[in-house]
Length: 581
Ligand SMILES: *[C@@H]1O[C@H](CO)[C@@H](O)[C@H](O)[C@H]1NC(C)=O
Ligand SMILES: *[C@@H]1O[C@H](CO)[C@@H](O)[C@H](O)[C@H]1NC(C)=O
Ligand SMILES: *[C@@H]1O[C@H](CO)[C@@H](O)[C@H](O)[C@H]1NC(C)=O
Ligand SMILES: *[C@@H]1O[C@H](CO)[C@@H](O)[C@H](O)[C@H]1NC(C)=O
Image (cartoon, rainbow, N blue to C red; front, side, top):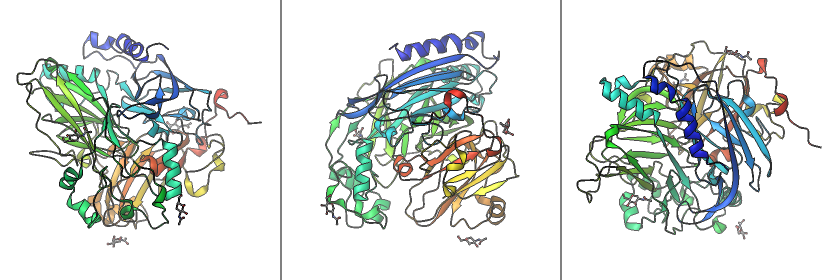
């Protein structure tokens, strides 16, 4: 197998790099070149945290290799499945305009790729920014199939960097940092495989709501914090639920407290599921930076199956300049919450004394206290090598010292886009288990789990978290991005968004709404909450809308959007369903 990374970078420098050599102000037309990637999936022992387990490796690697593309590239992505089970690969956030058969969702856009089989995905990188690809078959994303995608914007796209600094040197440094942006993949890790987890969940009625480690670029450790540290870190919110009980030795809420009113049988829960800490030490991620560069850019990618995490770099505030692959007016913050499926691109000024600075990641929910660290290291020799950086957050993600937490609701797209006020349908959505992909048989889906739309119309979707003690749900929509137009507390008892706007205008933003592909419902801790999104139907096909917490998706938290049923696409010969004999 050709070395995937060097092959990609070479392509990128040769073809996207041309514009840089010509200077910043000479726009080039969108690329239209063909790029091909080949990946092979294998099921192998891997010690991400020092403790071995079977994982999915992609070309022998974990995480899967990063793809670097130019906006406009025509991508061919060949998957060879050498796993013992069927699989499929989804390109998260990629709109798949005109190629709904390459979205990678078994039951919707394809049949799963059988063991020994191959599948060629073809799509165009129409939009710029940070994305990722991951398994979309059963719980396999939790077995390690995920990798970064970066699509370099073409030079006609206006960057928002002047809003950070207007100085020529700074602008040049920020553009260079963006050109060399690097992924930081945030994920979680369990001792058990996804299939074992599914089996235990079914047999015990216990949702697997805790993990054994948080990973940064695939590296981490199982750290047993100990009773004292856990006690100290227990917050009043934990206490409210815990009463006299304590967190388990993996920092997890006892299952008797947080599960729903259905039968449980906890006699046979394997060790590691919610308690039973066995420490192990894996590699520690180090990213090095050149102070002479003045800035570094990171694409923070929320690839966790379960954990929603707080991210920060000691002593280094971040300029958040893009979210879900779309520029925003840069917002400065010391920490931000990264939900499952979200991507945040950040610029960091390298203006501190040379040295090592701790990158901190902490679980954000009350389900578990668990954290992880990495190091951002200046390449020049530190003057005072022993100096430890000043922690920006504690192990529960709580800010320390003078600190700004990013407020997503205040993010303004760059440039702003305004959705239509004229909406054809409003749906409060409530996974199909179709034997045949719905793209080929759009009439075969269960009616209560599918939403059919007309092409060219605007659609509102309202998510209502009706029962209390629900975590925030990060909802991801396949195909094109949507506008987050409102969110609030209380019951959604309105017939339409227009009706709701009349009653509670303060909960809506129709002037500068965020443009995203994954957005999170407000936590429903004490009462119900809701979130409203609006999207334009432009790309006929069968697309999934689902919670990106993997155990919630496997548990059924998803619906199908049959977009543009009036303009249903003609399926190319090579993607048509072959009738099984
Ligand atoms: C609970 O599970 C155990 C082990 O799987 C089994 O022996 C037992 O009968 C179960 N109890 C109930 C009440 O179902
Ligand atoms: C969690 O944070 C603590 C306190 O900063 C640190 O000692 C520990 O190493 C962190 N855990 C991991 C797995 O990095
Ligand atoms: C669907 O609607 C969009 C937006 O109006 C339009 O650009 C596109 O061409 C339409 N697609 C088809 C297949 O008609
Ligand atoms: C909707 O419910 C809220 C309470 O959550 C109530 O105050 C309000 O009057 C209700 N609105 C309508 C239109 O029924």
